[in-house]
Image 1 (cartoon, rainbow, N blue to C red):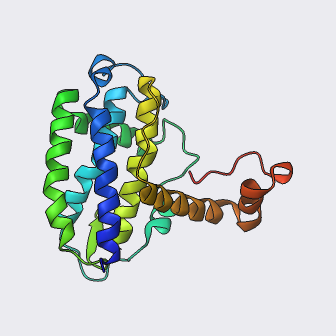
Image 2 (image 1 turned 45 degrees about the vertical axis):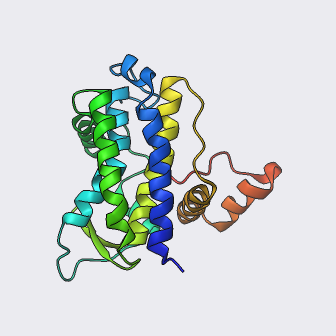
Image 3 (image 1 turned 90 degrees about the horizontal axis):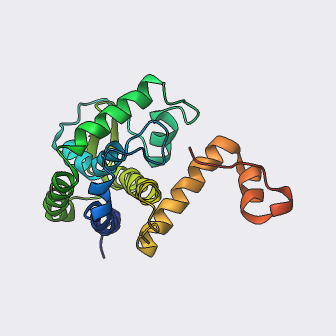
Length: 216
């Protein structure tokens, strides 16, 4: 039986393959410098930010984990990583946009090729690592590998949709098992933000559903 990290890794890599197809879409190159569906984010920067969901896994695996670093799971990561209400001028949001543009490289073809190369390198590397293998995230937190991959899987799924909307194309389907992991984790984050009853009502009772229940 595969361990959890192998299962999540397989879904992460399969979802990255779906992302790859969109990064190779000719419309990305055609609209590279246009505004995206996200405020103050060019399509190039959004595509680069999407690519970082794969690039960062290599970076995290390469970084030594110091002793005594707090270990967190995927839900706590998203609860701690930033303010979901922060506006586009928030320093963290500006930094995210800048890193996205940097990751975008010299153009759509360059980004897609680097994305595919990183994905290919990760496949054998992830296959040999256990669920509990610690990785250092943003030089701040230690995460078990399976939890780290869940955060990157969510980034792939969410920003795949953002990029598809930005390009005016239907959002590609991700694998069912990957979607289960993403939706379950997003529901846990939303519950942490809003409480059990509001989330329950949002999912089951339209007549009592709150106006907005989101994870971010």
